[in-house]
Image (cartoon, rainbow, N blue to C red; front, side, top):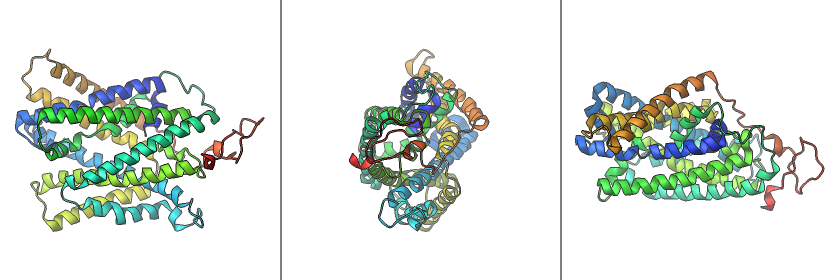
Length: 404
């Protein structure tokens, strides 16, 4: 969704906003500091102690909704990408069962995401997460290659490089969705061999910097290729017979499947803390996991527009989880003077979060984005084995992807 956020914000402003969101993500350091100040070890208990029961209830709802909607978006992405991968198999046409997104979502949910989500210890997913990161790097390389080979063949849309666009606030929501890790920060902090603030700060700085570099490269390469034609799922922009993009879709689908269980862990923990005092029996663990997987799968089967899902999850869930609540907790617990750096940063993050959430939600409702899910892009219609010359505007020269 990051190239899509560049389309919404305007590329120059979008890159500045991406830097801002990456900087604000460092609020996870303030959150862990708040946990140490209050003697708490979970996000829920931190908010309960600092903001009271009402704050705890609000957080629980947000922590449940964010990963749940994220899982829905992952399923949508899996259905979109893997169906196109399967259609490149000889004998698998548009009417084949493997080209049916509902079937693919059900298949991957039953065979992949459900078994991985049944783990009780998040540290068991360490190798899975590493594999997901490696797939992400492969995807980035593919997007960069296509920016150099396909991008020059697609004319930029009108005002493609305008500094700012009208939907910039909605773009912040999408970016927040990409960077958010607050909801599982305490889980990861607790999994460190030496869970100290210095170690956590080191992990946070390296991780956020790495995430920003990858995100900036992905956003700029994807947007450069398709400019105003960019979809919420960037792989919806590539032609179906693009072999390199097909490999990218495969990597993307596997990466999403491997990321899914981490969000399920968080959703399940929220319910366990809220209704079962944090402890689940084996039967309750399995039953709750099945319920969560069933809900996310059912919604993703019925709805397939990824861009709107990213926007709503960004402004409704990610923004308060990243911006508002961590800053409010730190301001409530800290006894620092008003001019202290952490105090000033917390105030800035809080005000920014409230603004982005209110304005972003209003604009998402008032100006919903179009969704052209499943449609072959117009520039793919003239896909030829050799480059064309002297063509009209509707016959854009595009090299055959198999040559690359």
